[in-house]
Image 1 (cartoon, rainbow, N blue to C red):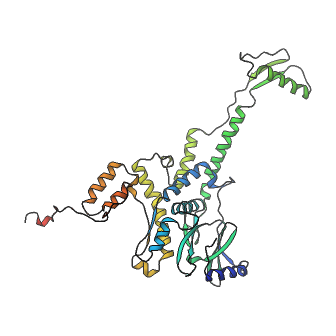
Image 2 (image 1 turned 180 degrees about the vertical axis):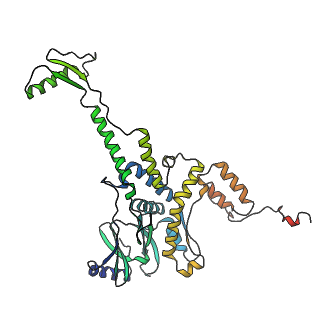
Image 3 (image 1 turned 30 degrees about the horizontal axis):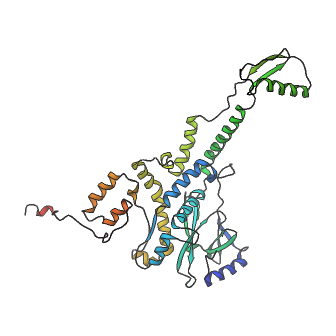
Length: 383
């Protein structure tokens, strides 16, 4: 896919052919979800929760501070690789992280200089392995049907549920029981519908009949009494039957309280609420969701990209990658107006920053700061 075209990478590809069988596996990540074959992303409710978080993360804006990385800053804000826009890149990256609890960011290097990063590509942890050869750790991974390898220290590694293992986050095994209940609930509803539409009457014949004759008699009784042609709703049968009793079919379906408990398990696991998924959250609810769910993911991505791009000296000088979000975009107009009014005349916000809050285009000379001049220090009030 043209991810590594420099001389150093071509040499590494040749080395891979020789070393593939000799690698010592350090940490092979095998995602474990549930006895349900589809996994955590194939259930409707869990996918909705994951998609909602990923979509909100896709609205974040990565910004590189400092003047050295102007070109890369533009790339990372628009199109990190030739297949994805920035929003698509972030959405896929976060989806991988939530589904597999591990996600890799692979740097794309310049054709001219082996150390110049010109883009990024998100890679699944499923199918990837961390290996060691001659004291050097490598990440082997797949994109499509092609295999690649890169030194692990160059890779950005995002983790979730980071606990027991040194190199990877834990699996989603804790969600197994809930996934099984969700699957059983869906099967129960489906089978309940089938059951309700099947046997409705029990008829006892007086005389003993051959199996084939019983089948013909059942078909006759159904055709005469249980079709739409019987508009009167009265069933008539002769003395061949001792009696005919209706069957009250009551299939078991999970009740409302149990269904709500299953949903809450999913919401608690992914730190999200039903109102967020349905886009009905209030200003305060969304603020809590941002701080408790989106902001930690944004912080981790920011720090991982900073480590990938900058040297230690550059980080000491203040270079970094920030995933910005105009948090007030989800606030009410009254809140936006109050914050803008209070912070503008104190020199905290510029005109253009206020325009961002209201999703309006920037204006000329909008980066200047202003402050009210009638303010004075307390010591000068009586002077």
